[in-house]
Image (cartoon, rainbow, N blue to C red; front, top):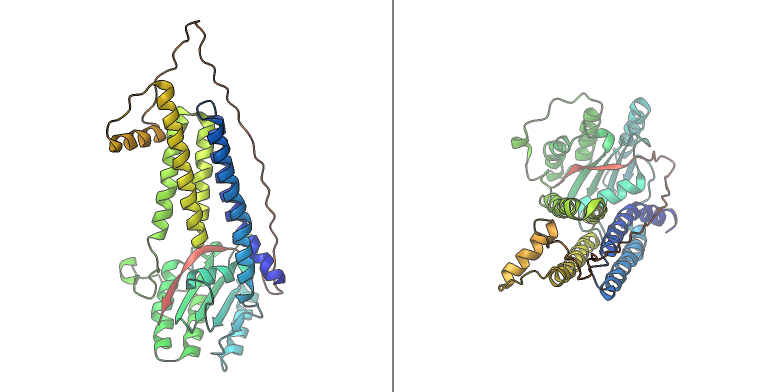
Length: 375
């Protein structure tokens, strides 16, 4: 496992740290409201968040480290593990080396028989990109071409530094118009060679302007799950809406906690099924804590209870986002006001990151951009 397991664990650690920060924000927020909530409820929420943090920190890392041996080792610029380039592999390797010497851009090619345990070509290409790290460190100007012969799928993954040239639109065009027709004819070597030539031309800035977006969205460049990005943005907006309400009714501390939750959801949902499970857990824990908070405020402020369950849930939602609020605290008979004790905590987290680069790796990062296709 060695360097590969460490690299994969380091790549997954930022997402887990964001989830931990989100859970910490939840705990601190409810601890700040401890005068309204029961101490038993606070302890339960603390235990739930702590348990989830432990699961996020250890279980995903163990799973990723276990699956790390499935990732191929970076041998050169041209990595033909599927053995589909017996005649032109050496020429493509020399071409990629010369291009790096001339421009500084690292472009890697990988052919495999199967994606293994990865659920999609996108997840596999991103894992390989984060492990191999093509591109110069700090510039992130590398690219990766992955071809999986068993699944008949391919993907072009690009770094942040190439987003202005090797765009998703250009990657989709290369896959659809250059590579897919050759693959469909059974010419694997010609498809890979032509795809590499097109990528290098675009990266060097010599490619013609891309065709309009309406004409470029074919089946080859269409993402497998186009709605996932909007789901993530919707969840982030949902929690930020909570934060805006708390800015008005719970101070800056509530806003910071809500932003932490939103960041945790966005980072968690950027991964595989474990990220989605974590996002759902965050939502459930959040709604449960807010329900307890509203119920306590109903008793404290003597708010009228709704006769309908629908109206009751509507009141909970409006209270949570800040559009409904209990009345002011009433004075005691002795003239003294009720005292609210508030406490806040701080949580400093640190994360370690280790670079595991091979002899030709430059330390670049993926920008999440690219396009996928099949033949």
